Length: 336
Image (cartoon, rainbow, N blue to C red; front, side, top):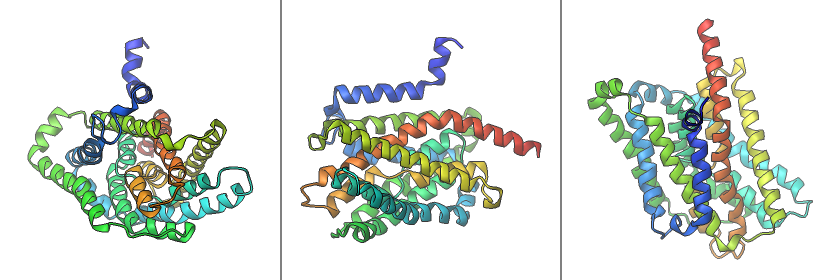
């Protein structure tokens, strides 16, 4: 395979490396209040584009069918908002015996209490041909559940409570997730023949938007002056986070691919990404609300700031392997 062909095939991985490098060299460009205005272009425009793109590309009957997949939704939400927090709480009982910073451990617990994201899980599921409709529903539904359950979980596990602006968060989610998805579906009704004939690069559009999200996420991470930690502590946290993600992805893969589960290969992919990913978009504002006035808020935020880009990087690295597995399962199913 020639160099140009290799670049075309691996352009997304190369893009990730480039945007992280750019974020390291000039983090001020993509931070809140910077030239790119991510508080508008990412929080509202980018997320809206992702779900409009999904609404335009998804067949209405597929979306309607996904809504009725109650077993899948129950599995994802139970794993995310029940099993995940309890499992991490038990793990932290062991890690508390080590010399790891107490506030970093609390940060790991806050990560566990967060809802699924409204973008990365959908994009990665779509990229490998998974059940995109199910990923969309669980990302949106999980985010709405998280507005209520995340503060309650934080109260249970960390003893922190505060008033949460439910109305403003609900309205933001409605305008950036529900409305674009509906508009995309309406547009599809009028453009169906044209879309089927021309086959626009929906996946590429979503991937480009994801690169923008990765860039601004790392800009925030690199420009935050309050998360100066010794290299050993940061390394330990990174190792723990990647270990948690890999372990939970492996567990979900095992549980969802058993014949008795009743899930298809496409379902398993959606479950794996939705149940293990955590929202930074909702997470950071919620931490600022719940832990308002805490002098250690920056340390508590570190694990989430690491977890979010880590889940995107790990998902992106695993894309070729998951694609290969999906193709093999589909061929096996067609033979049967």
